[in-house]
Length: 131
Image (cartoon, rainbow, N blue to C red; front, side, top):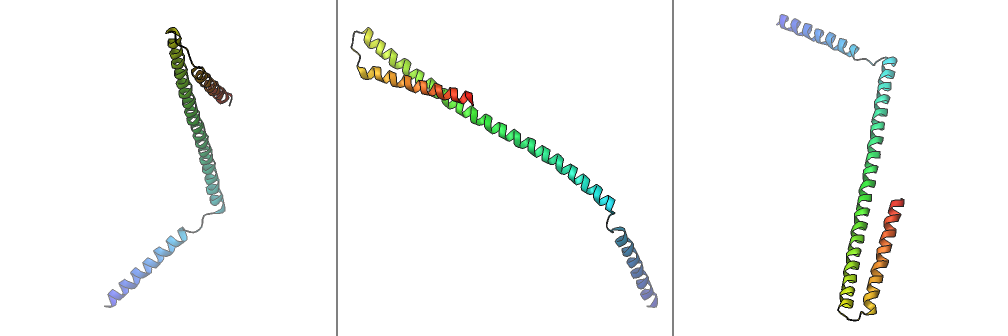
C-alpha cells in the first residue's frame, strides 16, 4: 500500500513538473514576434483588399456590359419592328395605288407616325452611343 501511495505521489509530481514546463513554453511571444505577426497580417490584408477591389471593378464592368447589351437589344428590336411596320404600310399603300384605288389620309398619317417613332428610336440609340 505504501508503494502504491509513493508511486501515485511520484506520478502526480511528474505530471505537475511536465505541466509547469508546458505552461512556461506557452508564454506570450516577444514584442518583435508580435510586430512581425502584425506586419504579416497587414500585408495579407492589403493583398486581400487589392483583390477585393479588383473583383468589385470587374463586377461593375460586367453590370454595365449587361445593361448596355439589354439597352441595345431593346432598341434594336424596336427599330427593326418599326422598319417592318413601315415597309408593310408602304407596300399596302403602293398596292392600293397600283390597283387604282384612292388612299386615305389616315393611311399616310399612320406611316408618318411610324416614321416619327422610328426617328425617336434612332435618337435614343444615338444617345445610348454618346454615353
